[in-house]
Image (cartoon, one colour):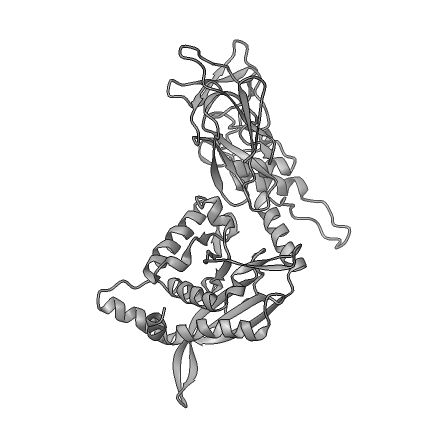
Length: 427
């Protein structure tokens, strides 16, 4: 976090680097108003990054003097976010009203179209969330109701005014579908010079898709990757879980076992649990595993990590994986969880596909993936039988290791899956 002292006793806190390779964040909701007292580490604003909504704490104590940004507006990293005056002597109060139109929260909710003559005041409880009309307000016939910052950004990036969009949600709420329909209507009828076909719609890439595009492009351009795969027999692992259930014991999910076996394989091949410092031509190896899990959400694919996965049992991994994936889907994963992974596990079998040559999650050096597990004819001890088979694929940075190391890593995981009881005894 960075900050610079202002004039006199005023200190200005700038938007810190929130990770993810982003250069800006959108202000979703101010948690304080001008004149409010704040304490060190008190959350003062909610901002939206490409992957989640996070609360930003204040590094200073005192009284809020300036909020540098409106709700719904993007702020660049390193730009002023909030100014705070140091705590005043007893009896002295600092109470300043925000500029007119700086925070239409209940009506309009921070849209770019301002309503002249409106200002925000504070409740006795502190937070500013009541909009009052001035003596001579100029109120439009219809004030748009927009509560989602994603919807506001989608309209703004498409060059559309929410004043011209009819909301189909409850009480006229403007939804994402409404904005997308307006974009489609605005672009319908234009013709592509390359294909000669009419353009059905143009949907701007949101901040999340831009961040994903940049990360994947960087991975492809910088990492010389190779892919290997193997079919694995999951029959014994399924049987182990059923036996535990029959005895009334905890039966962790399959992903928890895969995570435990992956951590064991990384202990044997630590070069796969790190990253490359290209400038110094060095391989960084980590003392511990932050196991990232590819998770599909309404916002897109995110990869939060189980921090300190090497310290957890299979049952503990199961609980943490469930908590982490739920938090990611609800946008509650922490910044450390979203950016701190050292190795990624990808369960694309959840999408009912058999295999995938995944893209390495930069700056990591490898990713392990599992396809769907289905009943297939299989030869066991010279006889044909039906077994539960799934494909495991492994993509690795060829600068870090060669095929022999990659194969050794995969066999540790595959052998543990095929003989889970013995593997767990040795973990």
